[in-house]
Image (cartoon, rainbow, N blue to C red):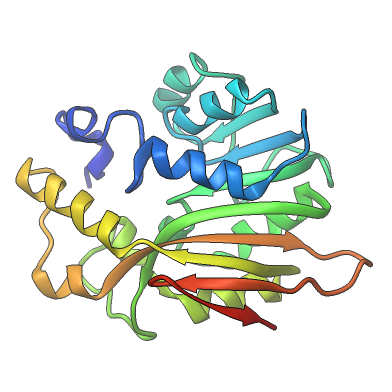
Length: 233
């Protein structure tokens, strides 16, 4: 099965970004993560290295990881990157101060292997910044859409539960439904994907900030959904 980013028109529409919002949203994610100067940051599933390049430009000790040799060859033009699988990463425990994971978790059939590895390679207190597709309602039916990000879309509640189970605390969330609609429309218009209206209305795009918990205790935060805020925890 040909993946959307393998389509010859992909870069014409999306550039090097593999997610809605492109560079602008990646910059916001990095800003919100508020990593310490010079922090060791993993770009997990770095693709062509667009965000990896942003991290390097910001002065972080950044490293990209991807399982595609073809994508890695492009990513290495933006910063250091290594071949590896998110579910079995070639790093020691506690190797990173933070991690970025953009539109990657929705491609995992099971979240546990990937989140277990992300928790393992992060130091206690390390920040995990995630952007990804999510299902507006729990129990979203992804049947017939295998191979796309939509096939792995989970509800916000399901995502938050998975983060918590694996030792993370979600302290910030934002939803960007408009960005997903705009991106989807561009990809459909270019003939890169086909998406029924029902599917488009069932999905949105979100940004999560999670902290790996150690002995420092619970962290309170906030959620932002459609411009409203409420205390978390």
